[in-house]
Image 1: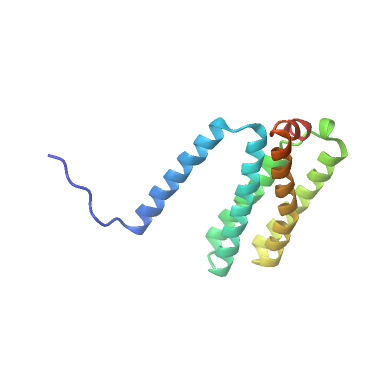
Image 2: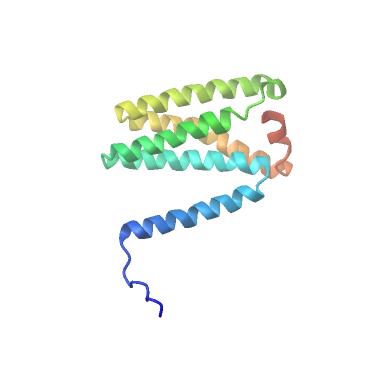
Length: 151
């Protein structure tokens, strides 16, 4: 009555299934995340996108490189920078906004020039922020930092 599933699945099917599984996991995390945890997820996603871009450059996969760098830039622009509240965060929020602008520009050039050094620079600039954000969350219970800098 029911057809049995094939024993061997194609690699593209496995990748698609893994992608769907990962998407469900991310959506579950988003539904229950605090504002602080959401920003931490943005930092993690940014670093993951840079790693994917670096791998795509090494594999000479221009399409994958463009997708990964585009994702990293969107995380910076639509996630991290868009959430800054300059009124409440003052000069710190303004400085972060300027850093995010610089990183977006460097990533755009990295995409155009297949420049791994620019990707590495962006990672080096963001890693201390990521670590500080994680440390602040652990110290304060994850509520104060997000309210002070983010809308």
